[in-house]
Image (cartoon, rainbow, N blue to C red; front, side, top):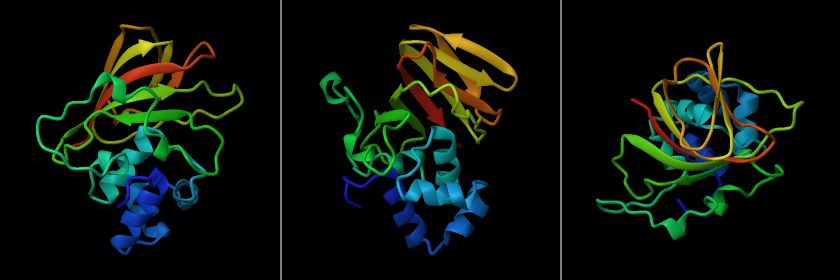
Length: 191
């Protein structure tokens, strides 16, 4: 698959290759068909939770949507190679994405963890914040800004140097706080 494709077009390609309709993928992933079609048409830029559900339904690792290169161990990502994420994934019909991902495990096709450098843009106050729930665990280290994590019925505010590690089956939502972007190192595990 060409590396210049967006996340939505990559998902559509894998869904089509497996002979699944959008309705069948919706059923298998627990997401709505409307959401999946919006994602495939680049009208929605998803958080990690829905991507995990789609990856599980397609029997793929999450990173398949973020990279498609294969390298050999060890995988090294130099600091000058990840300033703003992978711009090929940010094209599409929607304005600016809320999340900008940079896969730090790019090239390791047999990985069990997904290390990601993520920049989270603040959401407008009127935008609905939907919690996500999926198999696995997540570890987050805050690099810059304020991060607000809603976990179950709890709300946590984290600052640079703070970490949070949780079971992602519990409904959760991660957002930038204080009206400014937040930059985090996130490591997810999807069994």
